[in-house]
Length: 226
Image (cartoon, rainbow, N blue to C red; front, side, top):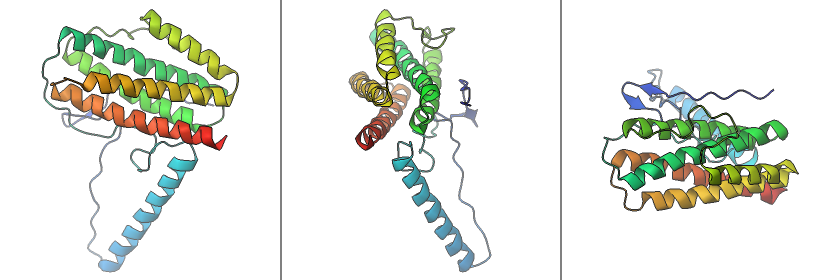
C-alpha cells in the first residue's frame, strides 16, 4: 500500500531542513588506517549503489542524500523584502508545488513505479519550504485546506485536470505529464529568480529549480526506457 504523505516542517537548531533531510557529520575512529579504509570502501560502495538506484529505479539524482529529489538541508537565509508581484508569484509557487504533489501521488497509486512516489515525497518538502516563505512574508496560502486535486487558481485547476486525464490512460501518458510539470516549473522558477533580491527566497527557489531539473531528468529517462 502507498504511504500517506503528510506535510511537515522540519526545523533543527534554528535551521530549516528544506528537503527534510538532516545533515550528518563525519564519523571518526581511532582504530587505525585499516578501519578507515574499510569505512571509505563501504561508503564508496553505498554511493555507487545509490547512484545506480537513482538512475535506473525511479530516483532522480546521483546522491545518497538527494536520491529522491529532495532539496537538501541548509539554514534559511535572512528575510528580505518582496514586491507585491513577487508575493503573488510566491503564492503561485505553492499551487504549482501542490499540483505536482497531488498529480504524482495519484499516479503513484495507479502505477507500480517508484519514480512517482519518490518525487511526490520531494514535492511535499518543496511545498513546506514555500509555505515557510509565505509565513515569513505574510502571504496568504492558497493551498491551505484544499484537498488533493483542488486548487484556488482556475488555471492551475484546469492544468491539473488535463494532466491527470492524460496520465490515466497509460504509464507513458503519466510520465509525459510529469515531464510537462517539471518543464513548466523550471520556466516559472527561472522567471521568478530574475530580479529577485531577497536571499531567503532566492535560496528556496534555487533549491526548487535544481530539484525540478533532476525530476525532469528522471522522467525523461523513464520515457526513454519505455
